[in-house]
Amino acid sequence: MTLPDDDRDLRERFASLRREEEPRATPLDRLLQSAAAGRVRRRREILAPVFVAATVLAALALVIGQALYLDGPTAPREPPVSLAAWTEPTAFLLRTPGHDLLSTVPAFMRDMPAVNPDAPVSPPQSSQMKRSPSP
Amino acid sequence: MRSAARLNGGRIELRDLEKLHPACFGWALGCCRWNREEAEDVLQSAYLKVLDGRARFDGRSSARTWLFAVIRRTAAERRRRQWILDLVPARWLRLNPDPPTAPDSESLADASETSARLRAALLKLSGRQRDLLHLVFYQDLSIEEAAAILGISVGSARTHYHRGKARLRQILLEEMA
Image 1: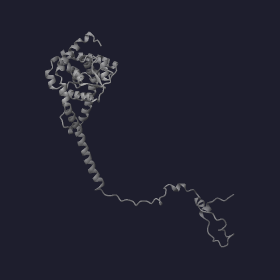
Image 2 (image 1 turned 135 degrees about the horizontal axis):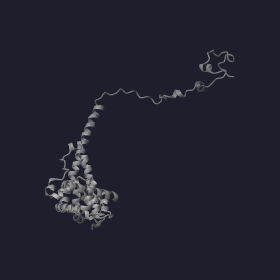
Image 3 (image 1 turned 45 degrees about the vertical axis):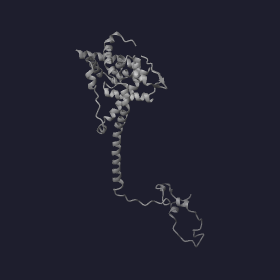
Image 4 (image 1 turned 180 degrees about the horizontal axis):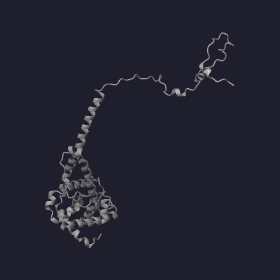
């Protein structure tokens, strides 16, 4: 790009700056020689705080862990519930009215005194009483 | 300027680095706000990236443009790392003292008054304006090449260039008056 003439003042100032700075540049050999040492120093500079912070955190975790699990009171444990004895807490919702009729086998005419004089006279069951009369 | 750097499997050879080194040093100084120690550190890291092959030259631009972009990126990485180390806990645990952020005394002592004034004025510009003016006037690159190094569009680079130039002139005039 061709710079316009009105930038001449700036160009001269920058050229003067460049003339001063470039001869004073650190030699490339020296830069590269100290690169390895610089790399180790930088790595140590970064890793040292990380290492110290990790050590402090680990020590803190150890102390807190000991305080919580080793020295603290042990909570009473409930006996384990047998799997066979377990019932669903919502099982009652599935019980319909008259479900006992469905879960027993009916014995027709066995308990009727008119048919069987030996049958004991017993009050009718609650579920039978609740049944509505047939039309 | 188109550099005659040779490509060796995407790598730049040491001989090419030697040729480009003075210009790279000037650019690194500009990226590090004329802090010589920081500039040397950035250059070291950038050269190691180039020589180790961690930064590969793909030949899409000139070797100088590419190398300048690597230096700029390395300087930005260093600034980010420094920012993390400057956080309070990290500062407590740090082994080395804080590096100076202003231009060091050695740089300023030898500088002529004109150059010192120009540096002081450049430091008052925004980072992008300073970088653009440095690349265009100090390194004699085109605005397009400067935009490629800074990773911005040419239009944006032109805007920063014109604004930066006007602001730099204004600062220099104010200081002279």
